[in-house]
Image (cartoon, rainbow, N blue to C red):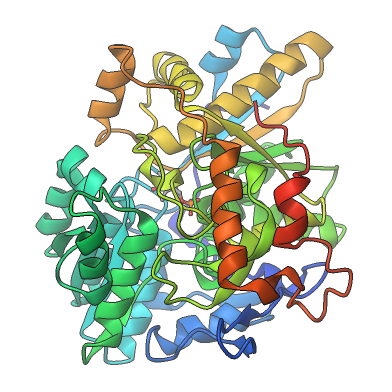
Length: 483
Ligand SMILES: *Cc1c(COP(=O)(O)O)cnc(C)c1O
């Protein structure tokens, strides 16, 4: 049986999220305090209590509150499409499916967690949530969600995006949020950066510092994060859980599950339930997981798996992840969601364990893929999932050569209707194929080493092998399959 568009009824909306922490091959290394060098948890003053509980939970299934499911119903379940026109254009024997999250009010997967976080904050008496945003997708998702539950929202938006992508700012303001370009003079962190570089175009790392500081220094205010954290990834699993039901309708199962990674939340939301199938013996066949990033911010394909801060001002604890160094200031590529220096710790652990693969593409080849997709499937993708589309096209072309009839699944995590400037630049051949230089990674790792000489000794006491340290990895990078 074949189908173009697979839908689910509202009743089939998942009732629980799947938590991968119940099934990891080994526990996540703890976060480390940079001064005491002791394991630490996320500060309770910063996050809603329920989110903190979920952050460390090893319960396999976590109930989705009815109010959250009710909000989800505004746009969920989302459709799963078969990309028949794209298959035809590629003349591939592969079957290509994509889950489309662009049907949400802000146009991406991000409200899957924003709704949950706003709900828990409201339940706990919080009045305002602060956050950072890059391209504005997370900010608009949080603004939408806070508005839904009656909370105020303050968004620190990376300055480059604030001016390059004004329409998402307008969307946030339409949902009632206040938005500031970051670095801003509203916080100590922002002021410090502006003193050394008045024209700093900002980064997610800097904006995180500002949003965190705002939450820590103001009553009734908590911070909300759009990716990387375990509880965020957990909330995104509605994506993969729905896909499983949709594919079951036509007796299909993927050989490949792929998606783009900025902080890793949308891709994790898709692959976690398939990972569960694999570890629980429920998967009817072997499935490969492929995370796709940008060559402009190649955290997983170029950055070593070490301890680093999650933000530029070093407010967060040290987190074990693949990192380009917290001083990383990314080039202003259009895929704003892929410009973070670090990556979700669960994803990094599974990459290190060989459970999943990563690959990087530049923005020019990604936009070429996006154009082909728009012209065949009729949906203009956001620049971020364009990277996953490039990967799926490459895999489909491989199948053409081998004759394999693989089933390929990717996540179209957002539409590109607010990214018209990016498409205009691409069509006008104004986009450079930016590749982040390895020397710059080495440089920032050297800085990290000087900052924390003791980090060259693995702080993960449960990881006796202590394989990856800054000292080793600066010299011997594992070969990446980045093209
Ligand atoms: C935020 C965003 C990303 C990157 O974040 P992840 O946590 O890796 O999903 C990718 N695509 C879109 C459309 C986004 O909004």
